[in-house]
Length: 57
Image (cartoon, rainbow, N blue to C red):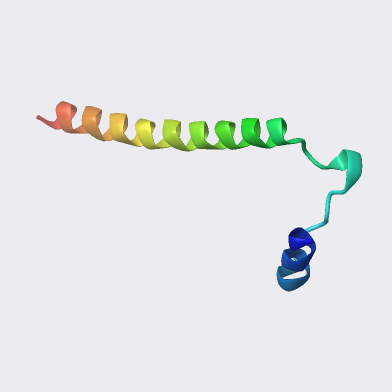
């Protein structure tokens, strides 16, 4: 099993087996949420810089 080989090589955190692990839909939703948060942070920095530039002018 490839996952077992990766876990053995990198010795990551606790393995989630059975009901503790996330289903594919949950993983996809979690990834979407994480990407959205990153995008919002990036957009907020951009907006802050634009407002700062406009305020100084």
